[in-house]
Length: 466
Image 1 (cartoon, rainbow, N blue to C red):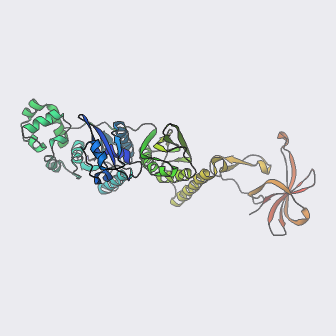
Image 2: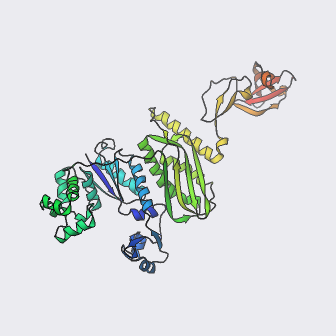
Image 3: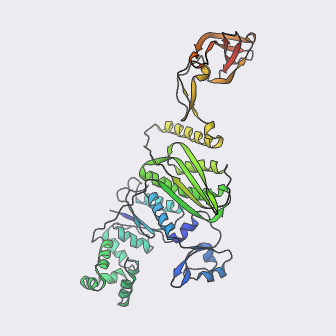
């Protein structure tokens, strides 16, 4: 087995900065003892002399326009689950390591991703695109990889002997042990895992408990690990809090892309797609604005959905600034991979893409397909269809372009080329007709489809040939 550990060491800060590019100093604060202190800060704030552990009041004196955010553990938990859904695109074996880590079993999927180096590069690029920072480490044991990632040692270890050489130098403070145990070990001069391994096991168990020895054994592969696999929810719903309110709809594109990347990973793990999305824009002291996007057929391509949303945002005017953006996909539909010809697949995809863009620009009712009906009357021989245009047998004696309504025409100004085709129908619904249709040509050479109304003897143009 081979495990990949991701340690999101800046998660308290990332949940506030991933929604948009932040050019102002921003800090995250939390209670430490009796005072509110800074637990994370962005690079702009650090350039002003602000650092972790500083009191919030002192930081305000160093930076004008300082943005202060209280730590949001609930947002951190939701972000970790969102990352777990996204990581499902690489492997189905994803495990949460709260409060700020993920563990991925990647030994069985290396060939799918063209080797370990390519897989690690994909994960690294994907984490950055989602707006997070993470330390990554690979090891034969899940807990060993996790300890390396927590220590910031971005190593790829292939065997247990090499793993032990790296772990013995790590501080005991990285272990998931009570602070009292770590402090007691430090008092007797034991500060690293190697120091602990040199002590008698029976003495360690008697003085510090079995849990300490068991955790070290799990990290070194001497004891099996039981890891609960992350199970994605049946539907997708994620949100991003923007660092500053967005006043224009176009400003939401940055946050939309990151939510769509999470959605794409979630759908790849479920082997599914979505045919409808809901974007919920939350305002201060106003009801939320809901933007809906309907798709012609289920899809999961984040880049294409984002381009469709760009069309929607260009025609949207926000009623108030947006402080939080949420994405909901209430219905997840199966999406089977199609085994078709490469060029045919490209043509079909381009046609669907054009259809979606036209529907957004012109409205869903203005763009539709057509299908034939069992009726001899030309104006009733077709009807709108929900999907794309459906194939029908071509009739070379009838034009594809029918006029909205027949226009009167003088028979002396046209030359009849072929016909007649007699149509008598519609008596059952009050729209009965009796017509003789001809293919004709006018003085300009245009081919027309004309008919003579047998009841009145008048001539009409009903269609035009290409």
